[in-house]
Amino acid sequence: MRHLILSISLATLCMSFKPIDKTPNKTQKLKADADNGGITLPKGFGALVVSEGVGKARHIAVSEKGDIYVRLSKLKDGKGTIILKDTNGDGKADETKGFGNFVGTGIAIGNGYLYASSDSSVSRYPMKNGIPDESKPETIVTGLELYGEHGTKSLALDDKGHLYVTFGAPSNACQEKNRVKGSKGMMPCPILDWHGGVWQFDANKKNQKHADGFRYATGIRNIVGITWNKEQGELYAMQHGRDQLTTLYPEMYNAEQSAELPSEEFLLLKKGSDFGWPYCYHDRFQNKKILAPEYGGDTKTQGVCEGKDKPIMAFPAHWAPNALMFYTGNQFPAKYKNGAFICFHGSWNRAPLKQGGYFVAFVPFGKDGKPSGDYEVFAEGFAGGAEIKSANDAKARPMGLAQGTDGSIYITDSVKGKVWRVIYQ
Image: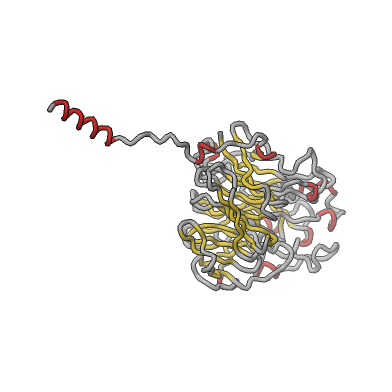
């Protein structure tokens, strides 16, 4: 009887403990490519190429399932979004599918939907089991004006049911004749009525027009990178500064000054913010908003610009910041927590100086929602070669950023649509 009781007790004890599952999870299985996909990263980081090329990639989003959605600026096989799936957990896309029949830049997943923008509208698709239902599209914003210069519509979602859409200015400096030497700036600038800022919409209301939105922030020439910071509960964006100071005003600016001015601006967007475009530009050397020459500026005078909102950080001119993301994951070291990553697409007009950008920067943030230190280069080598003479020479140009559920970071390229996944090893 004692032996029987002992046998039953041992059997019960064995049944109460499950065997240890030694199968590695997806993050543990990931292995960086030997050359990190051709890019250079800080010590301890590695990268693997998820896809060698999906087309003319723009912004990117990653679902909770780990599926990757890449917006395109040119249709590929009749589709404007590419879905990349990794079915075996090695980090490489082994299943590719097209989605939607319109091109554009903006994409975001939230509120149970996938949102995607064209240059004239914003649509959304309900997510079911982590997959968007293409058969049930809903038009959220429609009938937006189409224009060639700064016409892309980036977007962001907050946690309060709002959708933010960028409206770039179809102009360099609101001149009577755009980019023409001697043409004066229009005062007031009529473009600001409907462009040159960020508009807030109801993220759940269908068929809204531009007029149904609220002008959340103004005085911004062009935004491509925009995001909602959940930690701070605030909207942040990157501004592309104006061009052609020496071309239009050679008596005031030499070629080197025009290559360095104005700043590319990191903006904290508050309700009612006004950053001064086109009347003002930011000079990072003086750390001031300066009156634009089209409006009587002389490179020093501030005038009406003294009261305009300033950036929280300024970068060299013409680097073209095209994506912004705050890191909320736990995979990377603690210094990266809640800091900002920025994709600089790269310049075309910094001659006679070297072209700049073509890298991903990291900016540390403090608890006050502002940078706590200078930026540092996080990922570089996208363009290839020691020096890029022209943007057309670049093998790759970093364009989009997204964070995976495991804390990895995804980066897209606009040349061929290469997609990298950065991991901490």
